[in-house]
Amino acid sequence: MKRLSLLFALGVFVSGCGSSSSTAPTTPTNPTFTATLSPANEVPAIAGAEATGSGTATITMVTTKDSAGNVTAATATFVVNMSGFPAGTTINAAHIHGPNAPAGTNAGVLVSSLITPGANVLTNGSGTFTAANLTVTPDQANAILASPGNFYFNIHSALNAGGVARGQLVRQQ
Image 1 (cartoon, helix red, strand yellow):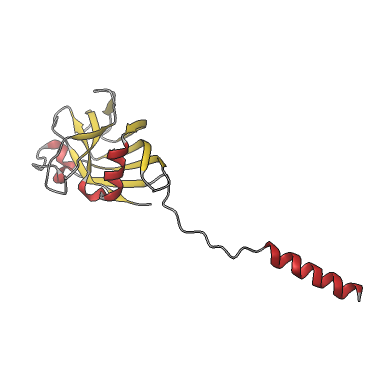
Image 2: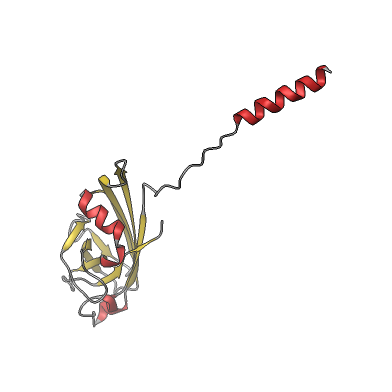
């Protein structure tokens, strides 16, 4: 009888530990975007020696949101990988452009990497750089989150100061 009472008490205890409430899925607080960088995506497309290059950019935003889900603060980190450029190509700038900049449309700089011109020389035609803790205003972050395809990332070289490789933002998470 003691064994049955003990099993009954244990069963009541275990069932009391469960929760009948369900948690709603939440939007990640660190959304990530990628851009496939190509000289052919520039407007106008790049011709000449640097047209052989390509790259990828991964943009991670760290966001703080209010109870309504609106971004109240944000920073970004850019990780950029480049290859296929002529040896000695100098990357002088990199940033997100937009808003209202779908493929084929140019727009102003929105979030700059703040890299120092001449600091990223692709000695062998390839290289990587990271720019971290970049300020993104809440309005900018909310706009990018709402419609990433209306923004693009591009890198600028000494030879192609208007931009050497570009790609539209695509949300990964």
